[in-house]
Structure formats: structure tokens, C-alpha cells
Length: 288
Ligand SMILES: [Zn+2]
Ligand SMILES: [Zn+2]
Image 1: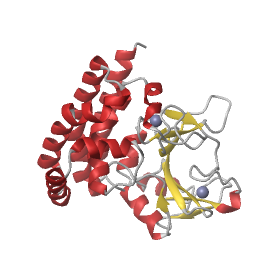
Image 2: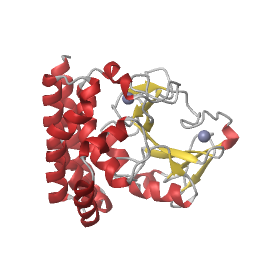
Image 3: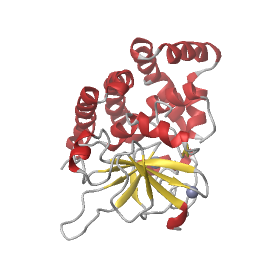
């Protein structure tokens, strides 16, 4: 497949998935409407950046000039009230170049700053050769993106090869979207691999031998119950050692899933993990 075809599919798949989840996850409709509107701006930013190929050192200025205005327009049109008013306030007090530069440097930021930086920079990073991004800083260990040093947003399991029970596990970068292989039942934040200290939560509990609990108290393995679940393919992977978690998407259970979209819309699982006292390794674009 050519690079162009692959890139087209990236955006087509995301739009398709937004439409699917919008129909069946009413609780996430406003979020999905905003994200769906952003996808138009992001696809254009992706195409423009692939053609312009800005230098890594100029990224923040490039993104602030070329992408931020479109992201602001869409957000003021489709975003929730609070995000809109915070965004207006921030743009009155700070140049977007600074906001984007802080996200590239991996600094702690307010929710609205992270949103603006990620929504604007994400598609540009996806369009560029990730290896040119190493200048962005970040850690270099198995728990960070091998290309740009960014933290993981989510975990996903690929469809297994015919003779295997489970597919390989990957982490997906919160900054550039690159996926890299990572061992199962190992914390993506601290590397803990003692199964007694790793908890898996899913809507139905878990049918595997791993430790688990239940979000809604439905019995595991009951096919009628399984049909009623909203997230049969997503689980919370949490660590008792560092008290962090991330969501893991199983593509074998739902091959139509698009990890970055499904992770955004799984709000009830994030709320459940928070109730248990865990904090997400990297909050997603929408702050969950
Ligand atoms: Zn990365
Ligand atoms: Zn941990």
C-alpha cells in the first residue's frame, strides 16, 4: 500500500468510527461531535504538513500559524461552553506558539492548553517522519515512544496470528501516534510486572486468568450479557505500584475499533478507574 493510501485510510477510518460510536454511545455524543469536527481541520493539517515538511525546530511556530486558527474555529463552534470560554481566555493571555512548545517539551499544562496543543500538533507530527521529532525531547526507555520520546496514550492488542490465542500488544504514542510493541501484563508507566500488583477491570470482568473486577457486576462469559455491553473490547489496565492506568483496546474482539477514537469515547471506564483511585498515564485529547 502506498503512503498516500495509508494516510487516506487513517482519516477515513477515524471518521467512520466517530459515526459508529456516536450512534451507540450517547453519553459521548458531544465529545464525538467536537472530535468529528476537528478531524476535518486535522486532515488538512496533515496534508499541508506532509507537503511543507517543516523543520523540527520550527514546529511550534508552524503549528501556531497554520493549524491553530482552524482548531480554534472548530472548537468555538462545536466545543462545550467551558472549553470555549477557557480557550478564548487563554488566547488573550498567551501566544499559541508557547502553548504548543510546552506540549512538545513534555511540560505539565492546564487542560485547555493540552487540548489546543494536541489537537493542533497531533496531525502535523503524524504527517512527518517521526525520527525528525526526537528533538522534541522525552524519555528513551521501553515505556516511551521509540520515535519521539512521548508517553503512551493507550494500549491495544492486534488480531492474533492463526495459531496464537492472543495477538501482540502495542502502546500508542500520545504525541505522534506511532505504535510500539510492549509486553503484556507489564505496567506501561513504571514497568511493574508482578501480576499480583496489576489489576484489570472490564465491564464484564475478565474471563482470563488475570486478576480482575467488574464495572457493572455482570457475570463474565454470559453471551447475553456480552451483547448488552458497551465496551466488550476495552479494559482498564491498572497498577497498584504506581497507581496509574491506561485503557487497552482489543482489536480481536472488535476489529472495527480505531484505538484512538474508542479510547476517547470510553468515558465511563475512565470515571470508574478514577473512582478506584487511579490516574491515567496520559489524559487524552478531551482530558479524560
Ligand atoms: Zn511518538
Ligand atoms: Zn505502575
